[in-house]
Image (cartoon, rainbow, N blue to C red; front, side, top):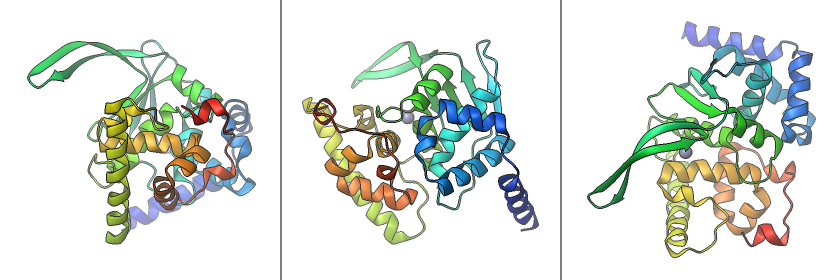
Length: 268
Ligand SMILES: [Zn+2]
């Protein structure tokens, strides 16, 4: 109890600290969505960034050097997921590992009922419930920050997994306050996940990345990417999914999105 109180007081002090000018310039320069947020959301986001940077460790991998630009570009994007809600700042996450570009991992994948294939695959990011860490590629982080409406953002994707882990399971269900909210969430996600799987199997074009058809955890992560990056299209084509995410995140990205609904985008 005392520990919890001290932690909350420390976070309060961190949020109220003057935000370093150099960090603000980096965010304004590299994180495009930041300029479109309301003044109060910008202030709230910067407060969260202060706590995030004080509590998380960063490590460079593959010869990559961690700079303030790297730290604030990751923090500003991750903290977008925390606005307007009570938050514990991704409590299971201690360390963020950053590679310069994509990185290679050994992977065993099932390609048939009793058939497995082993090989090396390239990745942009990953995290796991028991890892205590999250891995990202700097190339993908920068790309996500520079284009806030192409539907892809590796930081939002991996930190969405961290939100999913907050209720102790990697099941596509983040921490929800009441049983009613859990039931409503499950009903929407089950039906939307089934639709994405069906569309993926029959080759029908989808707004959501079909990687989300892998399992409910990936479905949640790609839905979060679409919610923040393609909110108008998601709201038009998946209104129930949009409403469920809007209710959880307590924000409406349509209000600050740079998304345009051109013909090419609507048909994709
Ligand atoms: Zn994922």
